[in-house]
Image (tube, rainbow, N blue to C red; front, side, top):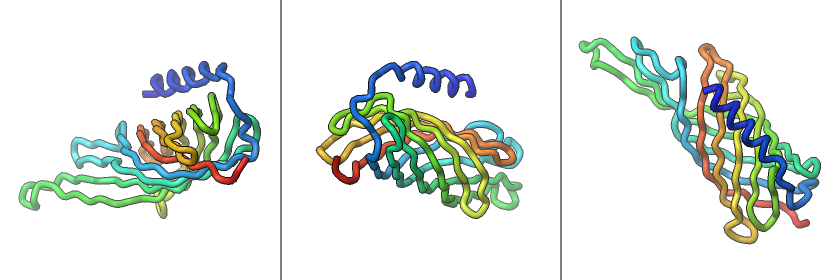
Length: 186
């Protein structure tokens, strides 16, 4: 899994030769997304006790351009988790519970290619607190590809890897789709 992440990040950095179409300084972007998250590793499966699964995610984002190719911002996300616990047959065999946790993330977008009125391609990375009241620190990285579907709304796809430093550590792949809306006028 680590090799896939490193290879994906290396590929994204290799693409940085592409020229950005416009300056991002002072631009603001907001939006929302919905996605599905897959969990990997020991944190998500134990043969003896049952499984723990990540699932549907929803969130909102805001970014502000600090220079020609870089935006910084934040994200408030909601992640659904489902746990299934194996019980002895006399107690019913198994039980499950679903809960939703809040993630507060800070991130950056690095523009590989950006224009206000057409396509945009970003590398995204950041960190933050996963899990609401049981907060654990984590980091993430991935890409964002946006296509403008009207003059003021863009649709995007965003695959990202998350690594949460819990006990045991959680590795997740999130694939999200959303809308991105430029704020203000330039």
